Length: 176
Image 1: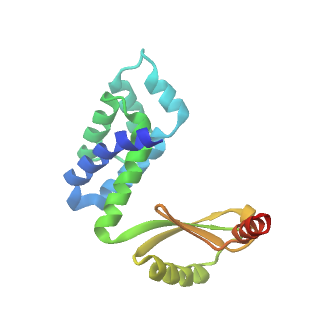
Image 2: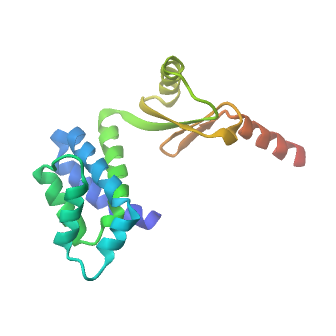
């Protein structure tokens, strides 16, 4: 996976520099392209030696829900011609990190054993923003294996207050 990140970084940085004034819109179409590029059938089609890069471009352009701006078309052509279609989801992730860093924000994933209602999520957001020292874009994913509590991942930082983590700590303490 580190190799894919290494390949994706220059693409994400170049795209970020070229669309710096309109990073929000670029992020939208890049996320849509990354979702399409993540499809295994499409990747098999693109890897076929019988298929030209223009055919791959036309298929992707036909699948996306919205009309792509010129910058998106040019970027997509470049990625396809360089054989980096598989790196597109990672390019989108790194682009999002650059965009968030510029605005002082970060993406956070809250893993919870149970659904979290909107008011509890708003309260949690305030506490987490104070804890991590930046604004957070929260998304919630259910993880019943946590038993209770939450695990929050912000970039490479993790805050784990789940019952599963506490049980693991007790197990380590008892076996030491």
